[in-house]
Image 1 (cartoon, rainbow, N blue to C red):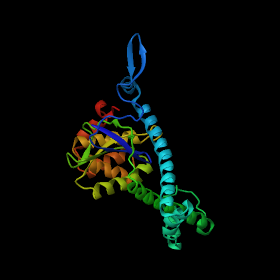
Image 2: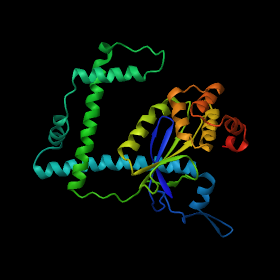
Image 3: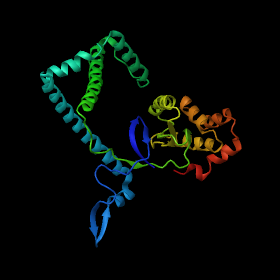
Image 4: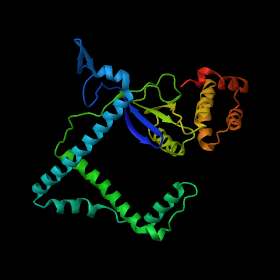
Length: 294
């Protein structure tokens, strides 16, 4: 099964998946890149050696081309629309963007500020609201214009029958026997790479849960632990979660790890007790080389 990277949130990479044909955006598996003693070296040979690096480069190239193309198309379509209705481009942009956004109210600024404080790093001194309210207002106005721009762009593309002729790069990501939840055979699969010690991964969990709730019956979620080297407690926590999975309690253990983010050895054992796992099997699993393998 092939899948594409759809988003990265904090330390979490989300792959939205559907059955699809192979496409790299820069070549096809059979493309010959070099010949050695008459033997062709192809895209497939490179993928076998450096799939991750090449996938990242292809994705970055695709995004750069897509942004450039969309900027070109937006200007082109606005000019076309302006000519059609007998107005200037600036007049069209004003009437379709600035004039159609909701004015930023004081309550919007206050809500944005409260959210900043909520997500600020511990110990960070926040400036007073009065000091940054103008900047917050400017940002909210820009965000609303960008949102409206996207809506208007979609309308223009539909009106003038725009069809893209190149595709997002895709790569295979194994799901195997990794912990999963959702409906078997769902049209969309998410493979989540996450780190139990990562605060951004914890925040991203709300978004993942929201997707699973809103698209119930249409999504299957796989979890792959991805402990970062500078998080010293992430690997032991991932191993403990694997051991909980052996007793059918991965998701319960997963939720406790993220809810508490207390990851000392005693904490890992306490979570197992709370879930009523067989502690003998759990402790044996923690030292098992199979559970510790990357």
